[in-house]
Image (cartoon, rainbow, N blue to C red):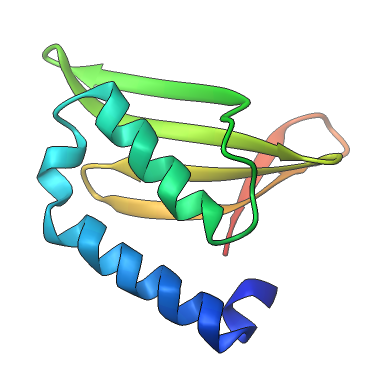
Length: 104
């Protein structure tokens, strides 16, 4: 939420997001396309360019979703792209050890 408080960051993110959404189907033509979009969106939040972990799903041999996990100090953040939309946020580890994703 801190990033959205800054008008310059918020405006740049929204403009980039609109470009992504304008041609969203092409994002899923290849894993590399999806990774490039994940990195582009993450950069607006000061996250590193390097995806620490990634998770992909396929349906009928076509990319269905890609989640990139970014490491920043001790914190982890995610950007998820799937056919239904985009979500991003911080990965929160609960006391029981399970990961919980909190959307920004």
